[in-house]
Length: 80
Picture 1: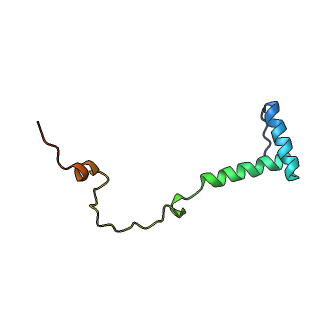
Picture 2: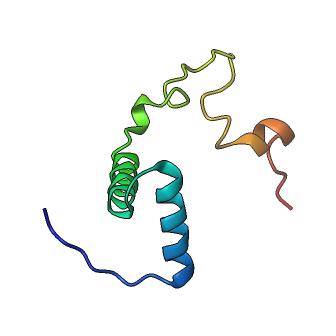
Picture 3: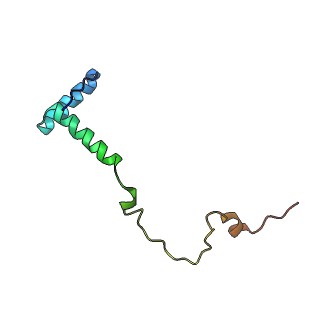
């Protein structure tokens, strides 16, 4: 295990101390837990998110509707 030395403001240190006390753990253990959680979030696979896996609903709309919405709403532009 490695040792890390860092500077914290008095406010940050007091918050860490209070949170560690509330959880019944040490500041060291609390910081390790937060870092582990942060690392797990950055490894999150978006393709497994339920929102990502929603199947498209068949509407019969043109495939390029989002790219050409104005054309479908207002028709072709008149030149002149």
